[in-house]
Structures are given as structure tokens and as C-alpha cells.
Amino acid sequence: MRNLTEANVTEAVIQTFEGTPNERLKEIMTSLVKHLHAFIRDVNLTEAEWLAGIQFLTATGQMCDDKRQEFILLSDTLGATTLKDLINNRRPPGMTEYTILGPFYRQDAPELPLGSNMAGDISGEPVVVRGRVLAPDGRPIPNAMLDVWQADAEGNYDLQMPDLEGMALRAIFLTDSEGRFNFHTIKPSFYPIPHDGPVGQMLIATRRHPYRPAHIHFIVSADGYASVTTELFAEGDPYLDSDAVFGVRGSLVVPFVRHESANEAARLNVSAPFYTVDYDFVLEPA
Ligand SMILES: [Fe+2]
Image 1 (tube, rainbow, N blue to C red):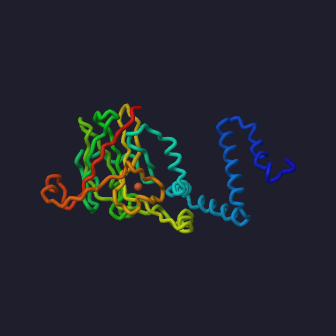
Image 2: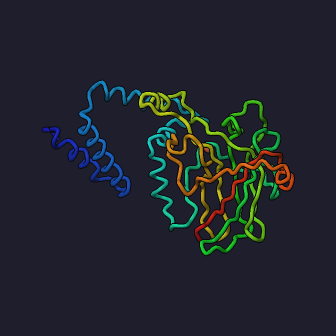
């Protein structure tokens, strides 16, 4: 290891992992060094750029606390989270696709009866969400659980509403004996990811925006099936093709169908105008 050159330094570093007892750690460290060195060669990294990178990662760490995880945001905005998710959630065609959980999930949302309004007092355009939870052969799954959460019409989750005590815009629903669910809510808005830190600086420098298209989050689970974490996206949203965290899947984009009829609204116990969203979730047997 005395005569290190551009040509042999990578191999010299990799050699130092020879004695790693944990085989998986050895594999990961070896690959990491290979790719890190390849990156430095690829861009001919300068002294100033190396320092800027160190400062960026330092600032990213310093931005983290128990509420803010800037490194996850960095992973999300570089598509690393989505790539990891795609690799770890491979499913046969026809199953509801997985997409990112995001930072706003909270356990122990209130369980509400089917047909309830999970928006409570929060104002917005009414939406009726309806559908079924199905097995791959089309059989309905009774008693499946839908854990649902979303942002309001300004793009804020309850955690971002300073005057709010407790939870809002989240609920758990159980499907009926025919695998059906329906609930009322309000139309969510697109929203920006937190962009007042180093990740925001990266987005500005690369002329990217921080927005996610409007969506409703779901975790759908049932006994005997693999649960799926997913989101339904509003067709027509301006950010569907440029989600800042790469969460959109074509199969999860659904129309929010607008209705003007007061009679139809009265029948569904909402006020006109309102929207309907129809979607059937398909779960893979465990
Ligand atoms: Fe979200």
C-alpha cells in the first residue's frame, strides 16, 4: 500500500475489507468504494467540489432532528428511495402497486364507520371515495383494513396545522362483507416537500420544483394477504409528471370525477359540487 496510484488505489481500499466477518457488510462496503471511486473519476472531482460535497452532507445532517429527516428527503429527491422500494416490492402484474409511505403517516388513526366523513370540520371540496378490496382472482376481501391519510385543500397534513389538537384527515375503515368501502373526505391539494434546507438548495440549483401531485395515502391490509402501502393520485394534477420524490405510478392515477347535480349530492349525503373517486385495491396472497 505504499505506491498508491490512480490506477490501484480502489483495489487497495477494497483489499482492506478482506477480513470483514459479516459477508453482507463486506459486499456493501466493497461495492460502495467501487462506485464512489468510479464517480470521482467520472467527474474528475476537484478539491473545491469535494469540499462543497462534504459541506452539503454536513448541512444535511445538521438539518435533522426528531421531526425533520433531511437525509430521507435527500434519498427521496434523488430517486434512491423509489429504487429501493421498487426492488423490495416486486409484485405480479395486476396487484395494486406500492409507493412511498412518506413522512406524515401516524399510527392509531380513529376507526370510522363506512360512509363517514374523515375531513371532520376541515373545509374543502367534498369527495366520495368508493371501491372494493379484492384478491387477484376478483374475489372480494371482507374486513380488509384501509388506513387512510391525506393533506387538506392547502396541502397541509394535520401535523402541519399549528392550531390543531389531535388528528385530522386520517381514519381507518374496514370493508364490508362484499369487500366494499366508501368514505367522504375533501379534495387534497398538491404540496411542496420541506425545501428550506440543503435539499431545497439542491432543488433550486438544479432548477427543480419541490412539489408532489395531490394524493390520498393508503395502507391496505387483510388477513392472509401482503399489505400494500400506496397512494391514489388525482388525474389532471400539474405535478403528475414531475413528482419531486418520484412516487407516481400510472396505475395509481385516478380521475376525481366532478358532479354538479344537487340531487346526486343529496343521495350521497354531500353538498354539490362534489367529486367521486372509484378504485379497487388488489392484494397479493401472503
Ligand atoms: Fe403525502
